[in-house]
Image (cartoon, rainbow, N blue to C red; front, side, top):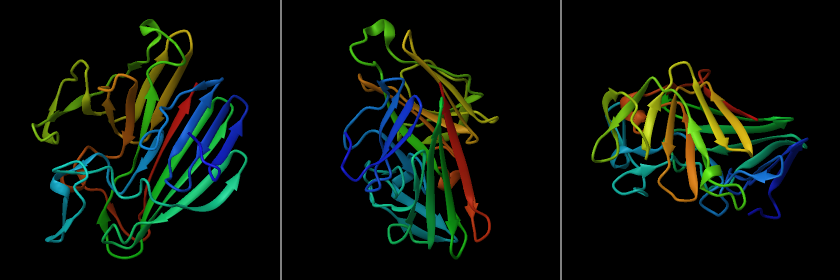
Length: 263
């Protein structure tokens, strides 16, 4: 579903609708096929300054505990930037750049930028987090909800996800990684996988479309529990990574990551 103020980006066989009100891709049409699940909670949204679950909604920096809304009790989910307005810095027919201040929802002064660009056969998403003051830990990632079936496709044409991770983060009863790395298991998944050479995943809708997702991020979360959607989420750290594998951001030392989807 698109809104009247959404931005349309178009190039040859791809049309993207981007919402400045939320920072989400509300639609991704490739070769006539809508790939994203529609609705206010869905599409594809940016995750920053953390991805997935933040344990108990707490972050400790220099001995100080910062607490966030536990919107996935008992955890805080998917960062602070989704579903909040973004400022449109640049906009062209095939490219847009949006920015959002991190505070007051985040206790450190800084900004997140996302750029969305299209070209024939390709969509590229990039995010950057910068600090305006003290160093703080950060993550970025993307949370697309892909439709399992395109149109009225039957089970034989349902989306297949193919990838070869080096490990799987063992998940505890609290749904956070335990710190142990295990051999990848079979689906169903609500799990995080490590790909140290960069995320590389093939999404295949048989006889319809094949899309390759690559990223310089080194973790990917796959969530395939819903009947109508599968989420494949490249991100720069595992769930609760702000506390376990922090990536420091400081003035002049931004966190930058990108993902490119080709078909």
